[in-house]
Image (cartoon, rainbow, N blue to C red; front, side, top):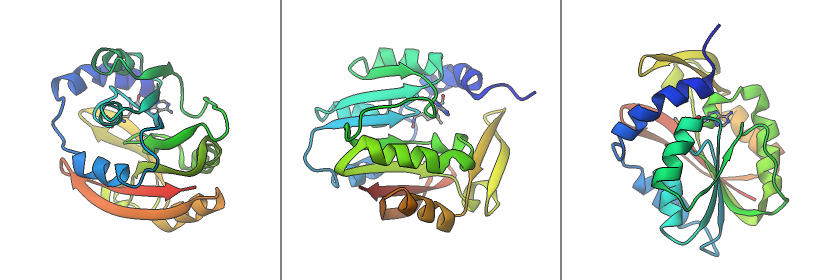
Length: 203
Ligand SMILES: C[S@@+](CC[C@H](N)C(=O)[O-])C[C@H]1O[C@@H](n2cnc3c(N)ncnc32)[C@H](O)[C@@H]1O
């Protein structure tokens, strides 16, 4: 049986700690940030990991941030480096929040670890949790990363087999529209030798 993803990320925590600040995501963060009005507000970070760099970026600008992650060790680092963030040790598919609670929701390098069959369910919840005018921003795996138009399977990352899952971008956009979102921006970006699709949607 494949090891569970939360346990794999527990083991990765030290690697993340050793490589803090290696990838510069500041252009992407700034691009999303400038779409948000009013600001500061409340951010939900799904699969927040260590809370860096995204949550910290928002906290430094005065936002209140709630981070959800199922790896205890990643959250221990978040507690250390971004103590202002409210952390929840949970599966992002299990949590629930008030309607219209957040001004922004992000899922940075995390949604692709959830089965594509469950993405629509999460998009509907994210839409409900966002206030009108709120935005969401997430990383999506595509052919540029997995080599397949659609994918459900394991890829080696830093010596461990990790589960990844995605539909085609066209199916993704249809799912987002069905959940009530407007797709505002999509861009492929190569960072650290990996190309992912970065998607911004609005309610
Ligand atoms: C590649 S890391 C990215 C962490 C952080 N967002 C960042 O950009 O540095 C993926 C994170 O998502 C978390 N994760 C993946 N699937 C999850 C799930 N279903 N529920 C909660 N956390 C999850 C992992 O534990 C890990 O911390």
